[in-house]
Length: 182
Image 1 (tube, rainbow, N blue to C red):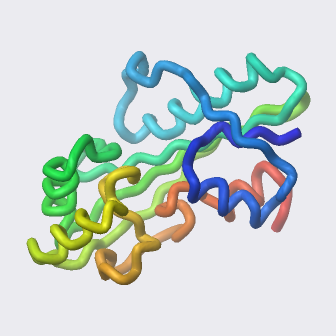
Image 2: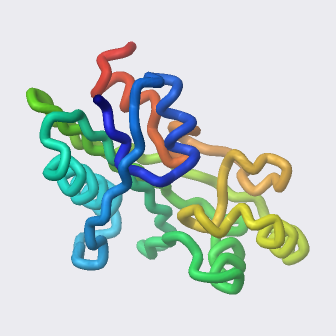
């Protein structure tokens, strides 16, 4: 059985494009103990989560994924509150940042750990738009306080790389390197 070691509803939906035969078992690993450079954080968090779940379910395949948003070497996680979300969105407004998703797949005879980068260019965001977006509740469970899929708010001008990576699950890379789907 394939275990998706993630609570993300977006990852649950996206993995269905690969398989419907999976269960969700989130990791309980202590993420605060990890001290690595920002560019390695997503990959190392995915390893931490995958190993945590794989140790408890040694006969199953485990896929874990984590995503970070980095602007000026600052990692933007999920906002703590509305003020934090506002500050993140204001910081990203009109600027380029990078989204890095790391994923780790562990099975009895295969292990894959990779990271994928996508560069995201934000539109200039008005204070009114930011406040309306926060009021929608959408930014509160997303790294960097935004979802590229929230198209009605017109946050993103363009990207260089994988759209699905910015959603938080680098679908194309996972298909190719884990499931051997071209």
